[in-house]
Amino acid sequence: MKLADRHCAHDAPALDDAALPALLADVPDWRVNRAGADVRIEREFVFRDFHATMEFVNALAFMIHREDHHPDLTVGYRRCTAAWTTHSAGNRLSDNDFICAAKADALYAERAGA
Image (cartoon, rainbow, N blue to C red):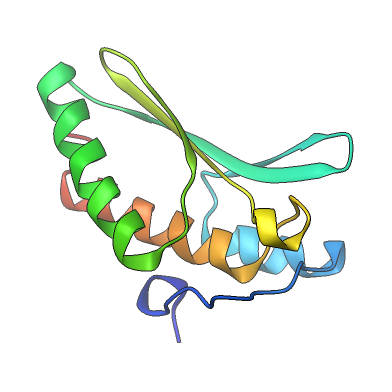
């Protein structure tokens, strides 16, 4: 089953680093960011204007609420950066982070970079 077709699990465990390359291959525009013991995946999305950015952010917020797995978002005039980590897994990566990244990619693709 594709990542974007899955749903987040309430108590998803932290992934072993060996599992990351295969999952990253499914979301190639995302990168791993390590800050000490904390690990997250992040991506910047670029849009034609502020309205397109906010349309994406609102669609993303709806998906995030439905999945109950919340990222850090940074929103600017033509950009939105999303970063996911799983706090309940010790600020490490879980399947939930990759599921939401794939869903965010699908939302972005629907808008063709709006």
